[in-house]
Each structure stands twice: as structure tokens, then as C-alpha cells.
Length: 53
Image (cartoon, rainbow, N blue to C red; front, top):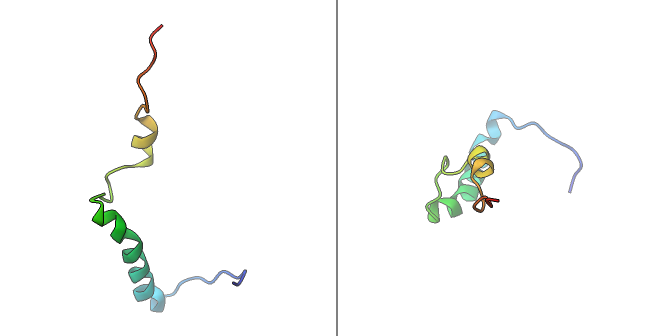
């Protein structure tokens, strides 16, 4: 593994597109949509009911 960073060029687009599609495919299989959950909605949604005192 290299410790160098290379900026992608237009020639890398097809490979990067296939990589993103492969990463996204499991989410599609689980019927999770791209906009289904955002960080804001995950943070603002209470994970459990508030305790009333």
C-alpha cells in the first residue's frame, strides 16, 4: 500500500463509477434509498421516549 494520494482524472471516471455502484448495490437490495436517512434526521430523531418527571 502506498502513502501517496493521487487526484482522480477524467480517465478514472468509469472505474470510480463502477466502484460506487458496487458499494451502493447492497443498500438497493435492502431497499434503502439514497435520501432515506440523513445525518440530521438520525440525530434529531429520539432513540427512546423522553422520561417525564
